[in-house]
Amino acid sequence: MRCEDVADLLSDAADGSATLDRATRRHVDRCLRCQAELVQYRKLLRALHTLRTEVLVPAPGLLSDILATIEEAGERQAVRSILRGRRVAYVGGIAAATAAGAAGAILFANRVRKSKVRLAG
Amino acid sequence: MPQEIGDLTELVTAARDGDHQAFEELVRVTYQDTYTLAYRLTGDEEDARDVVQESYLRAFKGLKRFRGDAQFTTWLYRITANCASTHLGRRSKHRHDELLEDAPLADADPTHDPQMRTEGNATRTRLNAALRDLPPRLRAVVVLRDVYDLPHEAIAAELGISESAAKVRLHRARKELRETLFPLRGEEAHEEGDRHAV
Image 1 (cartoon, chains in turn blue, cyan):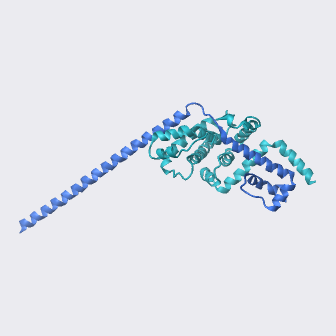
Image 2 (cartoon, rainbow over the protein chains, first blue to last red; image 1 turned 180 degrees about the vertical axis):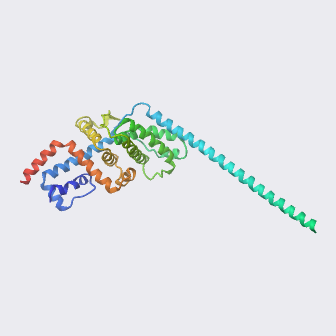
Image 3 (cartoon, rainbow over the protein chains, first blue to last red; image 1 turned 90 degrees about the vertical axis):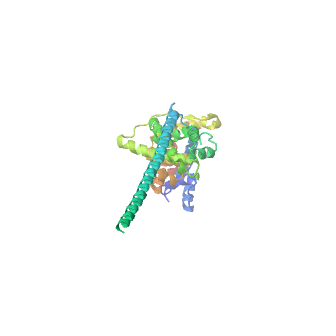
């Protein structure tokens, strides 16, 4: 087994996401180069993990910018919801008026038909 | 978390029920953390600000879809990663990646880990520089996996790549970082290894 065959497995072994098989372990046990790389990966991963404790402080104004954006979006949402409500009421009104008109037309047609029948009789 | 962000469940529930004050409080508590991630992903202050604003806007609009089966911060990281990826994709169409300048990093509570103030500080400074030198597509994967602990599946989904591509990028990023951070020791080790082999 050559170091090149092992190289890709070392970082996974360092983060615990993979375990080395017996042949690979035997190679690493005997190879200072691979041992050194494994140690370096472990150090690297520890260092990367400590970056979570760092906070980059943004230039002033970011918080107020975010809040303003959210407020604007909230207002837009509210307006949209009002308009949606009005649209429903408007469409509902039109539907009701149409239904009433249709009913009226049917009644009128019925009356006209009945009066024609009476005249013919 | 860089800062002790307490349990956000109540705030998230209130915000999801339409309480704008609760959402604003969520922003106040998390925005520095989100900015830090955005900066690490984009490597640029202006880009990071844009990404953060876009992220909170998406979070605000999509909060009702947040099921609460993950932590709110993890959900926010995923949104931020997605926004950063979109932003960088859009930006790379307009201009080449510029060399990134150092930006000051401030520890929220430098006293809580004294080790970091000594040798750890030097390593972290070099690590930050090495991260900024990585190509953005490699940097994104290693930051999301090794700093923010997102699973491969989530990283792949938010960056719009396959899970296997995410893993390949992670290997390449770690290798580049290792070679940058440990060049001399690496060479010494190789020489020793060669001697050992002989």
